[in-house]
Image (cartoon, rainbow, N blue to C red):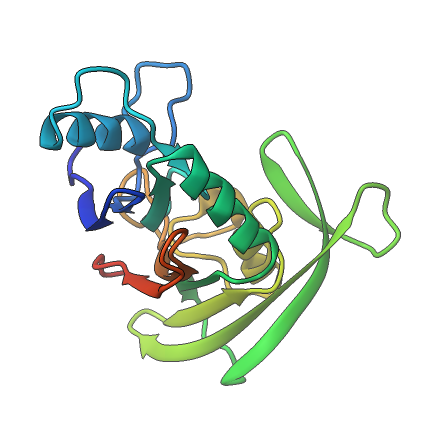
Length: 216
């Protein structure tokens, strides 16, 4: 892998890694590298584990996306973190470099989405199997070449939600050819980052905040 992952946080219950764009979060059944495999190898070496290493992703990000991925190191931690996500105790902040400049500083996008063949689509309300998707974005910075850096917060967790909703709004993510981008980005990557994650520790209940170090 061109850029290796980095360790953001580790203790007996958690491992938070900063994933480079272009790397799978989990093994795909092919010979491609994955963040999970890298993490297991690191834990095995760092802690001199003789047998199999327990390491389960609490959430996932698409292979072309960079940023934070949180892993549980025990089944108890995994169960508690999954519950924290279900009850809304976790906050995920994304950053996206997009084509175009929004004419508002901050707004909410609400769309009905379906997906098939690894592609999400915005469809009319009432379409069979469509689900409501909602996100908020805020303009952080205008960039050269008529691009903008946005802060994105999700109100729902739909398939490729940020990618398809921003594209539908007229602001495709740079490098995201699948969703209409015309501008190139780094090979195998799109300009989307899971930038910040806030989560309660599964044992101590302390509120932890992790921040990705990649630059879009």
